[in-house]
Length: 183
Ligand SMILES: [Fe+2]
Ligand SMILES: [Fe+2]
Image (cartoon, rainbow, N blue to C red):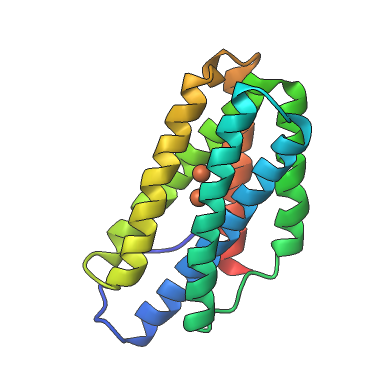
């Protein structure tokens, strides 16, 4: 994992590498989120849950578009793992949806909790630096917390085997973050 690094000044090399990594992993994560919801929507097509999932999916598309733009503008190398996230995200979404609407919502809670911690950590690392990136992270983070609340309102925590399911998904999400920062 990342060791402690000294504080940096805007424009220095370490800062640029650091923010490139942040943008890379965030783009990968938002892409993964769109794939999870696509997988869920392939299984859950109508009803109250489908409506909520569709709304969350639309917000993920917006987050992804914002990080896509940052990747282009700043010439960040995207993760090489997007084919993996394409399949793994979709599979996770479809599998949880097949377990039921509550399990699908439990997946959202688990992912969003990990992402919330991830974005909080990034925001802290940026400090006052890079206001454009910080603002993008801040806005996405607020939406992710709203997604978690939506999923909890849809009885995510009543999913069978909630604790185990949640722990497994969180482990996977953390691994995905770790890999996407690096590869
Ligand atoms: Fe998102
Ligand atoms: Fe989200």
